[in-house]
Length: 169
Length: 254
Image 1: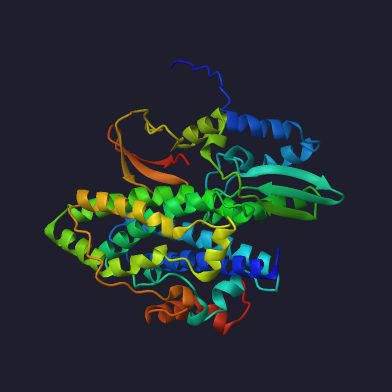
Image 2: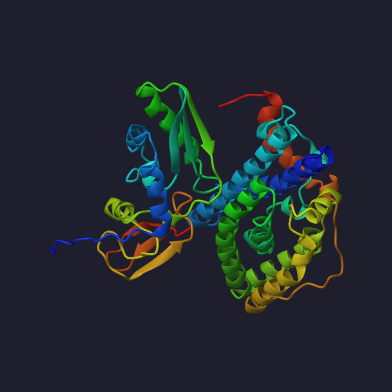
């Protein structure tokens, strides 16, 4: 098998988020929250998913800013609980979570690494409807909506397996 | 903000929240009743988007009113006369054709409406508009597809889709009628002028109906009243089911 080498081109939307993160004085908080994964798509952390926007300290309180994916995504509350738990375990008891709606969440915030992580987990990343199992481009949509709000359901005509497709949004 | 302006904004946010909640509840009724598993997932997902939208509008109304209410008391603590959703959203789900034709007519309205709302000078309404627009654009893609497939499908599916369109048509007029508070907010640049959206809506609906071999019903009748709390008999039954738990055990949490 050919060992692929990836040269990442950072999308502008993701670059802006990276710059905000690098400019933050609380690097340890970011690293801590890198351990909080999406409960429905455990291949991605909340940061990689584009949900985590900011984390900062104000006196003894930790403020976490999140952007919901879909308006009705039931996983948002589980994500917020997981953030509280993670911070709580590290000794941060006073946590406030703010929901920021604008700019609206978009899959443009997924980095190339996040897209690869989705693929390796068996989910076709946005704008790529090739089969994540066998790589065939012969795929057909089964349903515009899949097992979660962020995914559609496809089938591979080559290997016959169904797969989730992360919808561009 | 003046008291009048904030009470207009509160009433408006609740009205938009009611539209979303009631339609979301109707869609959710398909869970365990849909024609296929894929359609059930889709209907449930669209329902969740609407219910999530309702939460955002209600949350905003509660923040503006600052009178102790929250999204739950707004959703579960009011009776029919104070619900202000448009009537089209509360009609029983009917058969699958009725549900999809209604969804298409409402989605085709929501897309330009939410796009206009995203330009509001009120930051929270603009943010909700921006977020919900992306979802409604996706909903419209699917509901339009279904209207085409049902209309241009078998004789049976065509007849059912046409019957749904005929039954729904008189309820669509209300989509384009602003209520008093909304009209004042429109003048202030806070909301979109829904009346102005009708020509484009009609044009798009006509184009899809044409492809679906469906006939645009005549404008022979129209019915309104939702914004005044004057509802069809169906809303009471919907609320009785939706609100039961909070009525029986007020303030109960999971």
